[in-house]
Length: 422
Image 1 (cartoon, rainbow, N blue to C red):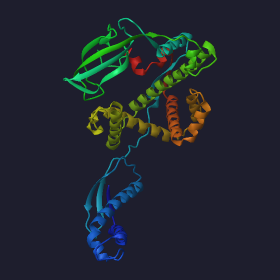
Image 2: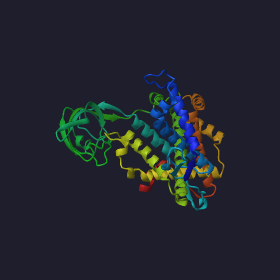
Image 3: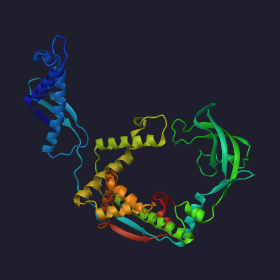
Image 4: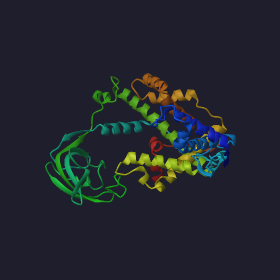
Protein backbone atom coordinates (compact mmCIF):
# COMPACT_ATOMS: atom_id res chain seq x y z
CA UNK A 1 0.00 0.00 0.00
CA UNK A 2 1.43 3.40 -1.06
CA UNK A 3 0.78 6.17 1.45
CA UNK A 4 1.39 9.92 1.13
CA UNK A 5 1.40 12.31 4.09
CA UNK A 6 1.33 16.11 3.58
CA UNK A 7 4.56 17.89 4.50
CA UNK A 8 2.59 20.21 6.81
CA UNK A 9 1.67 17.29 9.05
CA UNK A 10 5.33 16.33 9.45
CA UNK A 11 6.42 19.92 10.14
CA UNK A 12 3.67 20.37 12.71
CA UNK A 13 4.92 17.30 14.60
CA UNK A 14 8.56 18.43 14.33
CA UNK A 15 7.74 21.92 15.66
CA UNK A 16 5.70 20.46 18.49
CA UNK A 17 8.67 18.37 19.63
CA UNK A 18 11.11 21.27 19.31
CA UNK A 19 8.85 23.51 21.43
CA UNK A 20 8.67 20.82 24.11
CA UNK A 21 12.46 20.49 24.02
CA UNK A 22 12.92 24.27 24.27
CA UNK A 23 11.02 24.38 27.57
CA UNK A 24 13.43 21.99 29.34
CA UNK A 25 16.69 22.12 27.37
CA UNK A 26 19.79 23.04 29.42
CA UNK A 27 22.38 24.81 27.29
CA UNK A 28 25.35 26.74 28.69
CA UNK A 29 24.84 30.50 28.49
CA UNK A 30 21.03 30.35 28.47
CA UNK A 31 18.43 30.11 31.20
CA UNK A 32 16.01 27.13 30.95
CA UNK A 33 13.12 28.05 28.67
CA UNK A 34 15.00 31.04 27.19
CA UNK A 35 17.09 29.21 24.57
CA UNK A 36 16.51 30.77 21.10
CA UNK A 37 14.54 28.48 18.77
CA UNK A 38 17.32 28.77 16.18
CA UNK A 39 19.72 27.12 18.64
CA UNK A 40 17.16 24.45 19.58
CA UNK A 41 16.50 23.71 15.92
CA UNK A 42 20.21 23.49 15.13
CA UNK A 43 20.86 21.00 17.93
CA UNK A 44 17.69 18.94 18.09
CA UNK A 45 15.83 19.15 14.76
CA UNK A 46 17.38 15.98 13.29
CA UNK A 47 16.25 13.83 16.24
CA UNK A 48 12.86 15.56 16.39
CA UNK A 49 12.28 14.94 12.69
CA UNK A 50 13.25 11.27 12.98
CA UNK A 51 10.80 10.79 15.87
CA UNK A 52 8.05 12.71 14.08
CA UNK A 53 8.43 10.72 10.86
CA UNK A 54 8.31 7.42 12.81
CA UNK A 55 5.15 8.43 14.68
CA UNK A 56 3.45 9.79 11.54
CA UNK A 57 4.23 6.63 9.57
CA UNK A 58 2.70 4.53 12.35
CA UNK A 59 -0.45 6.64 12.73
CA UNK A 60 -0.97 7.19 8.98
CA UNK A 61 -0.59 3.46 8.30
CA UNK A 62 -3.36 2.53 10.72
CA UNK A 63 -5.55 5.35 9.41
CA UNK A 64 -5.08 3.94 5.92
CA UNK A 65 -5.90 0.32 6.81
CA UNK A 66 -9.02 1.44 8.68
CA UNK A 67 -10.10 3.52 5.67
CA UNK A 68 -9.48 0.58 3.33
CA UNK A 69 -11.15 -1.85 5.78
CA UNK A 70 -8.09 -4.10 5.93
CA UNK A 71 -7.14 -6.36 8.84
CA UNK A 72 -3.32 -6.50 9.14
CA UNK A 73 -1.70 -9.66 10.48
CA UNK A 74 1.49 -8.37 12.06
CA UNK A 75 3.53 -5.19 11.67
CA UNK A 76 4.20 -3.75 8.18
CA UNK A 77 7.53 -3.51 6.39
CA UNK A 78 7.99 0.17 5.50
CA UNK A 79 10.01 1.40 2.52
CA UNK A 80 10.32 5.22 2.41
CA UNK A 81 10.16 6.81 -1.05
CA UNK A 82 10.35 10.53 -0.22
CA UNK A 83 11.78 11.76 3.10
CA UNK A 84 13.02 15.22 2.12
CA UNK A 85 12.29 18.21 4.34
CA UNK A 86 9.54 20.37 2.92
CA UNK A 87 8.17 17.62 0.66
CA UNK A 88 5.22 15.30 1.23
CA UNK A 89 6.24 12.05 2.95
CA UNK A 90 5.77 9.03 0.68
CA UNK A 91 6.30 5.41 1.66
CA UNK A 92 5.23 1.89 0.73
CA UNK A 93 3.90 -0.40 3.50
CA UNK A 94 4.02 -4.12 2.79
CA UNK A 95 2.04 -6.34 5.14
CA UNK A 96 -0.02 -9.50 5.43
CA UNK A 97 -3.73 -9.47 6.15
CA UNK A 98 -5.95 -11.96 7.88
CA UNK A 99 -7.49 -14.28 5.30
CA UNK A 100 -11.09 -13.59 4.35
CA UNK A 101 -13.10 -16.78 4.02
CA UNK A 102 -16.36 -18.47 4.88
CA UNK A 103 -16.20 -21.73 6.83
CA UNK A 104 -17.75 -24.49 4.71
CA UNK A 105 -17.87 -28.27 4.36
CA UNK A 106 -19.80 -28.97 7.55
CA UNK A 107 -21.77 -31.80 5.93
CA UNK A 108 -18.54 -33.55 4.84
CA UNK A 109 -17.31 -33.95 8.42
CA UNK A 110 -17.80 -37.46 9.88
CA UNK A 111 -17.95 -37.78 13.67
CA UNK A 112 -17.99 -40.95 15.78
CA UNK A 113 -19.57 -40.03 19.12
CA UNK A 114 -18.88 -42.55 21.88
CA UNK A 115 -21.25 -43.43 24.70
CA UNK A 116 -20.44 -45.45 27.81
CA UNK A 117 -21.46 -46.12 31.40
CA UNK A 118 -19.44 -46.68 34.56
CA UNK A 119 -19.99 -50.38 35.32
CA UNK A 120 -19.44 -51.92 38.76
CA UNK A 121 -16.35 -53.69 37.40
CA UNK A 122 -14.95 -50.31 36.26
CA UNK A 123 -15.52 -48.94 39.74
CA UNK A 124 -13.78 -51.96 41.30
CA UNK A 125 -10.78 -51.43 39.02
CA UNK A 126 -10.62 -47.77 39.99
CA UNK A 127 -10.64 -48.64 43.70
CA UNK A 128 -7.64 -50.92 43.11
CA UNK A 129 -5.86 -48.11 41.25
CA UNK A 130 -6.51 -45.77 44.18
CA UNK A 131 -5.15 -48.36 46.59
CA UNK A 132 -1.98 -48.74 44.50
CA UNK A 133 -1.57 -44.97 44.31
CA UNK A 134 -1.58 -44.93 48.12
CA UNK A 135 0.77 -47.85 48.54
CA UNK A 136 2.85 -47.91 51.71
CA UNK A 137 6.31 -49.45 51.81
CA UNK A 138 7.79 -51.59 54.57
CA UNK A 139 11.48 -52.48 54.83
CA UNK A 140 12.12 -56.04 53.62
CA UNK A 141 15.18 -58.22 54.20
CA UNK A 142 15.49 -59.60 50.66
CA UNK A 143 16.70 -58.82 47.15
CA UNK A 144 14.91 -56.02 45.29
CA UNK A 145 12.05 -56.82 42.93
CA UNK A 146 10.04 -54.73 40.52
CA UNK A 147 7.55 -52.49 42.39
CA UNK A 148 9.82 -52.40 45.45
CA UNK A 149 10.94 -49.01 46.73
CA UNK A 150 14.67 -48.53 47.12
CA UNK A 151 16.42 -45.82 49.11
CA UNK A 152 19.61 -45.10 47.17
CA UNK A 153 22.65 -42.85 46.88
CA UNK A 154 24.09 -42.41 43.39
CA UNK A 155 26.74 -40.47 41.51
CA UNK A 156 26.56 -40.07 37.73
CA UNK A 157 29.53 -39.18 35.55
CA UNK A 158 29.97 -38.38 31.86
CA UNK A 159 33.52 -38.75 30.52
CA UNK A 160 34.69 -39.18 34.11
CA UNK A 161 33.19 -35.89 35.28
CA UNK A 162 30.14 -35.52 37.54
CA UNK A 163 27.33 -33.54 35.90
CA UNK A 164 24.63 -31.25 37.29
CA UNK A 165 21.62 -33.18 38.58
CA UNK A 166 23.41 -36.52 38.21
CA UNK A 167 23.96 -37.25 41.90
CA UNK A 168 21.69 -37.66 44.93
CA UNK A 169 21.66 -39.08 48.44
CA UNK A 170 18.79 -40.83 50.17
CA UNK A 171 16.46 -40.65 47.19
CA UNK A 172 13.46 -42.97 47.00
CA UNK A 173 12.99 -44.94 43.77
CA UNK A 174 10.24 -47.44 42.90
CA UNK A 175 11.57 -50.06 40.50
CA UNK A 176 9.47 -50.22 37.36
CA UNK A 177 8.26 -46.63 37.67
CA UNK A 178 10.42 -45.58 34.67
CA UNK A 179 11.40 -42.45 36.56
CA UNK A 180 15.05 -42.86 35.64
CA UNK A 181 16.65 -43.28 32.21
CA UNK A 182 16.32 -46.72 30.52
CA UNK A 183 18.40 -49.42 32.22
CA UNK A 184 18.81 -47.65 35.57
CA UNK A 185 15.95 -49.36 37.39
CA UNK A 186 16.45 -52.71 35.63
CA UNK A 187 20.06 -52.62 36.78
CA UNK A 188 18.98 -52.57 40.44
CA UNK A 189 16.66 -55.60 40.32
CA UNK A 190 18.15 -58.26 42.60
CA UNK A 191 20.22 -55.80 44.64
CA UNK A 192 20.21 -55.98 48.43
CA UNK A 193 20.58 -53.33 51.13
CA UNK A 194 24.23 -52.28 51.46
CA UNK A 195 25.13 -53.41 47.94
CA UNK A 196 26.88 -51.11 45.43
CA UNK A 197 26.33 -51.42 41.68
CA UNK A 198 27.92 -49.63 38.72
CA UNK A 199 25.57 -48.98 35.78
CA UNK A 200 26.85 -47.97 32.35
CA UNK A 201 23.94 -46.34 30.55
CA UNK A 202 23.18 -44.07 27.59
CA UNK A 203 20.84 -41.07 27.77
CA UNK A 204 18.05 -41.21 25.14
CA UNK A 205 18.64 -39.13 22.00
CA UNK A 206 15.49 -37.14 22.81
CA UNK A 207 16.36 -36.61 26.49
CA UNK A 208 14.84 -33.42 27.89
CA UNK A 209 18.22 -31.99 28.91
CA UNK A 210 19.80 -31.43 25.51
CA UNK A 211 23.28 -31.21 27.07
CA UNK A 212 23.04 -34.90 28.04
CA UNK A 213 21.00 -36.31 25.13
CA UNK A 214 22.68 -39.33 23.52
CA UNK A 215 25.68 -39.34 25.89
CA UNK A 216 27.00 -42.36 27.80
CA UNK A 217 27.14 -42.13 31.58
CA UNK A 218 28.41 -44.23 34.48
CA UNK A 219 26.26 -44.36 37.63
CA UNK A 220 27.64 -45.70 40.91
CA UNK A 221 24.61 -46.67 43.00
CA UNK A 222 24.52 -47.67 46.68
CA UNK A 223 21.33 -49.36 47.91
CA UNK A 224 20.53 -48.24 51.45
CA UNK A 225 17.21 -50.07 51.98
CA UNK A 226 14.78 -52.29 50.10
CA UNK A 227 11.07 -51.87 50.94
CA UNK A 228 8.15 -53.93 49.67
CA UNK A 229 4.73 -52.47 48.75
CA UNK A 230 1.72 -52.88 51.06
CA UNK A 231 -1.73 -51.94 49.73
CA UNK A 232 -3.98 -50.06 52.18
CA UNK A 233 -7.29 -51.52 53.35
CA UNK A 234 -10.57 -49.94 52.21
CA UNK A 235 -11.45 -48.51 55.61
CA UNK A 236 -12.29 -45.17 57.24
CA UNK A 237 -8.63 -44.18 57.45
CA UNK A 238 -8.30 -44.70 53.70
CA UNK A 239 -11.54 -42.81 52.92
CA UNK A 240 -10.42 -39.85 55.05
CA UNK A 241 -7.44 -39.31 52.77
CA UNK A 242 -9.93 -38.27 50.07
CA UNK A 243 -11.93 -36.01 52.38
CA UNK A 244 -14.80 -38.51 52.62
CA UNK A 245 -15.82 -39.15 56.23
CA UNK A 246 -18.34 -41.37 58.02
CA UNK A 247 -19.94 -42.70 54.84
CA UNK A 248 -18.49 -46.20 54.79
CA UNK A 249 -17.54 -48.20 51.71
CA UNK A 250 -20.80 -47.51 49.86
CA UNK A 251 -20.51 -43.76 50.34
CA UNK A 252 -16.93 -43.91 49.13
CA UNK A 253 -17.92 -45.91 46.05
CA UNK A 254 -20.62 -43.35 45.30
CA UNK A 255 -18.14 -40.46 45.39
CA UNK A 256 -15.60 -42.31 43.25
CA UNK A 257 -18.32 -43.17 40.72
CA UNK A 258 -19.26 -39.48 40.47
CA UNK A 259 -15.67 -38.57 39.68
CA UNK A 260 -15.44 -41.35 37.09
CA UNK A 261 -18.65 -40.18 35.42
CA UNK A 262 -17.26 -36.64 35.32
CA UNK A 263 -14.06 -37.91 33.72
CA UNK A 264 -16.10 -39.97 31.24
CA UNK A 265 -18.14 -36.96 30.12
CA UNK A 266 -14.97 -34.90 29.63
CA UNK A 267 -13.23 -37.67 27.68
CA UNK A 268 -16.16 -38.16 25.29
CA UNK A 269 -16.51 -34.41 24.83
CA UNK A 270 -12.79 -34.05 24.13
CA UNK A 271 -12.76 -36.81 21.50
CA UNK A 272 -15.75 -35.32 19.70
CA UNK A 273 -14.12 -31.89 19.76
CA UNK A 274 -10.87 -33.25 18.29
CA UNK A 275 -12.79 -34.90 15.45
CA UNK A 276 -14.71 -31.68 14.77
CA UNK A 277 -11.51 -29.64 14.66
CA UNK A 278 -9.80 -32.16 12.38
CA UNK A 279 -12.84 -32.06 10.10
CA UNK A 280 -12.89 -28.26 9.98
CA UNK A 281 -9.19 -28.21 9.12
CA UNK A 282 -9.60 -30.72 6.30
CA UNK A 283 -12.61 -28.92 4.83
CA UNK A 284 -11.16 -25.41 5.06
CA UNK A 285 -7.56 -25.15 3.81
CA UNK A 286 -6.31 -21.64 4.62
CA UNK A 287 -3.12 -19.84 3.73
CA UNK A 288 -1.57 -18.88 7.05
CA UNK A 289 -0.11 -15.36 7.39
CA UNK A 290 3.62 -15.79 8.06
CA UNK A 291 3.52 -13.22 10.85
CA UNK A 292 0.92 -15.22 12.80
CA UNK A 293 2.82 -18.47 12.20
CA UNK A 294 6.08 -16.89 13.36
CA UNK A 295 4.48 -15.52 16.53
CA UNK A 296 2.99 -18.92 17.37
CA UNK A 297 6.31 -20.69 16.74
CA UNK A 298 7.96 -18.25 19.16
CA UNK A 299 5.31 -19.00 21.81
CA UNK A 300 5.85 -22.75 21.41
CA UNK A 301 9.63 -22.30 21.65
CA UNK A 302 9.26 -20.47 24.96
CA UNK A 303 6.90 -23.17 26.27
CA UNK A 304 9.38 -25.90 25.27
CA UNK A 305 12.26 -24.24 27.11
CA UNK A 306 10.11 -23.71 30.20
CA UNK A 307 9.01 -27.35 30.16
CA UNK A 308 12.28 -29.12 29.37
CA UNK A 309 14.91 -26.71 30.65
CA UNK A 310 18.55 -27.03 29.65
CA UNK A 311 21.06 -24.30 28.85
CA UNK A 312 19.34 -23.10 25.73
CA UNK A 313 17.44 -20.01 24.60
CA UNK A 314 14.08 -20.22 22.79
CA UNK A 315 15.44 -18.82 19.52
CA UNK A 316 18.11 -21.55 19.45
CA UNK A 317 15.42 -24.19 18.90
CA UNK A 318 14.83 -24.87 15.17
CA UNK A 319 11.59 -23.27 13.97
CA UNK A 320 10.71 -26.34 11.88
CA UNK A 321 10.24 -28.37 15.08
CA UNK A 322 7.15 -26.30 15.87
CA UNK A 323 5.82 -25.22 12.47
CA UNK A 324 3.27 -28.01 12.05
CA UNK A 325 1.78 -27.55 15.53
CA UNK A 326 1.89 -23.77 15.18
CA UNK A 327 0.11 -23.89 11.82
CA UNK A 328 -2.64 -26.12 13.24
CA UNK A 329 -3.21 -23.78 16.17
CA UNK A 330 -3.25 -20.65 14.03
CA UNK A 331 -5.59 -22.10 11.39
CA UNK A 332 -7.97 -23.50 14.00
CA UNK A 333 -8.00 -20.15 15.78
CA UNK A 334 -8.99 -18.43 12.53
CA UNK A 335 -11.64 -21.04 11.67
CA UNK A 336 -13.21 -21.06 15.14
CA UNK A 337 -13.32 -17.26 15.18
CA UNK A 338 -15.00 -17.25 11.77
CA UNK A 339 -17.63 -19.83 12.85
CA UNK A 340 -18.39 -17.62 15.87
CA UNK A 341 -18.79 -14.67 13.52
CA UNK A 342 -20.83 -16.54 10.87
CA UNK A 343 -23.34 -17.89 13.35
CA UNK A 344 -23.24 -14.87 15.69
CA UNK A 345 -22.35 -17.07 18.67
CA UNK A 346 -22.00 -15.65 22.18
CA UNK A 347 -21.10 -17.51 25.39
CA UNK A 348 -24.19 -19.12 26.91
CA UNK A 349 -24.05 -17.84 30.50
CA UNK A 350 -26.15 -20.76 31.73
CA UNK A 351 -23.57 -23.18 30.35
CA UNK A 352 -20.79 -21.06 31.83
CA UNK A 353 -22.31 -21.41 35.31
CA UNK A 354 -22.93 -25.14 34.80
CA UNK A 355 -19.29 -25.67 33.78
CA UNK A 356 -18.03 -23.75 36.79
CA UNK A 357 -20.34 -25.69 39.09
CA UNK A 358 -19.15 -29.01 37.66
CA UNK A 359 -15.51 -28.04 38.17
CA UNK A 360 -16.33 -26.82 41.68
CA UNK A 361 -18.07 -30.07 42.59
CA UNK A 362 -14.67 -31.76 42.82
CA UNK A 363 -13.78 -29.52 45.80
CA UNK A 364 -14.88 -29.72 49.43
CA UNK A 365 -16.50 -26.26 49.34
CA UNK A 366 -18.06 -25.96 45.86
CA UNK A 367 -19.89 -22.67 46.50
CA UNK A 368 -16.66 -20.95 47.52
CA UNK A 369 -15.04 -22.08 44.26
CA UNK A 370 -18.02 -20.81 42.21
CA UNK A 371 -17.83 -17.47 44.02
CA UNK A 372 -14.09 -17.25 43.34
CA UNK A 373 -14.62 -17.68 39.59
CA UNK A 374 -17.23 -14.94 39.46
CA UNK A 375 -14.92 -12.56 41.31
CA UNK A 376 -11.99 -13.15 38.92
CA UNK A 377 -12.65 -11.76 35.46
CA UNK A 378 -9.66 -13.45 33.86
CA UNK A 379 -10.65 -16.91 35.09
CA UNK A 380 -14.29 -16.30 34.22
CA UNK A 381 -13.42 -15.21 30.68
CA UNK A 382 -11.31 -18.34 30.23
CA UNK A 383 -14.36 -20.45 31.06
CA UNK A 384 -16.46 -18.35 28.67
CA UNK A 385 -13.92 -19.06 25.92
CA UNK A 386 -14.16 -22.79 26.57
CA UNK A 387 -17.96 -22.66 26.49
CA UNK A 388 -17.90 -20.65 23.26
CA UNK A 389 -15.65 -23.29 21.71
CA UNK A 390 -18.11 -25.97 22.84
CA UNK A 391 -20.90 -24.02 21.13
CA UNK A 392 -18.82 -24.02 17.94
CA UNK A 393 -18.55 -27.82 18.24
CA UNK A 394 -22.32 -28.09 18.78
CA UNK A 395 -22.95 -25.94 15.71
CA UNK A 396 -20.81 -28.24 13.58
CA UNK A 397 -22.43 -31.38 15.01
CA UNK A 398 -25.85 -30.13 13.89
CA UNK A 399 -24.63 -30.21 10.28
CA UNK A 400 -22.02 -33.02 10.31
CA UNK A 401 -22.48 -36.77 9.81
CA UNK A 402 -22.63 -38.12 13.37
CA UNK A 403 -22.54 -41.82 14.25
CA UNK A 404 -23.11 -42.95 17.84
CA UNK A 405 -21.10 -45.90 19.16
CA UNK A 406 -21.48 -47.63 22.53
CA UNK A 407 -18.16 -48.66 24.10
CA UNK A 408 -16.74 -49.65 27.47
CA UNK A 409 -15.73 -47.05 30.05
CA UNK A 410 -12.07 -48.00 29.61
CA UNK A 411 -12.18 -47.45 25.85
CA UNK A 412 -14.09 -44.18 26.19
CA UNK A 413 -11.58 -42.61 28.58
CA UNK A 414 -8.51 -43.96 26.79
CA UNK A 415 -6.50 -41.16 25.16
CA UNK A 416 -7.06 -40.93 21.41
CA UNK A 417 -3.43 -41.73 20.54
CA UNK A 418 -3.44 -44.85 22.72
CA UNK A 419 -6.70 -45.99 21.15
CA UNK A 420 -5.24 -45.61 17.63
CA UNK A 421 -2.09 -47.50 18.63
CA UNK A 422 -4.20 -50.46 19.73
